[in-house]
Image (cartoon, rainbow, N blue to C red):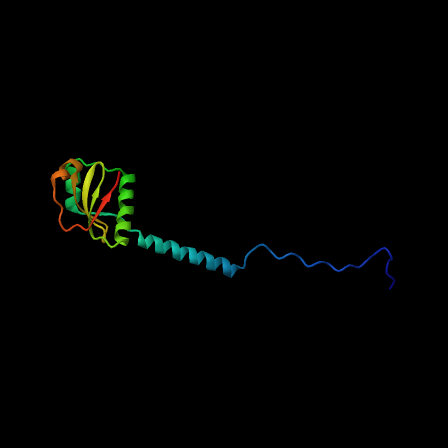
Length: 129
């Protein structure tokens, strides 16, 4: 068998590695993200409003928008992390007595009603503008 002199044999360079990650690594990353995300969700507690507090809010026409409630929730989480238990939350609209450990609003007053009040058994204050 005679080889054509115009044909030159060359060795091919190895192909570059694939940019696609190993499937096991991708699944592990998804699993880690899912675990971290679930952990964060578990740490974030929804605000509980007692029947008494709800009644006070309604009877006093206290209006707190969703954005403000979210801010109150976040500040209560911070208070819990600092070890606070019973706290007073003061906003422009209202004064709320809360249990930061259980994320519970215990009672509510209009801001104007709270100016001459004495709050006992409170170990923290949260001011929200």
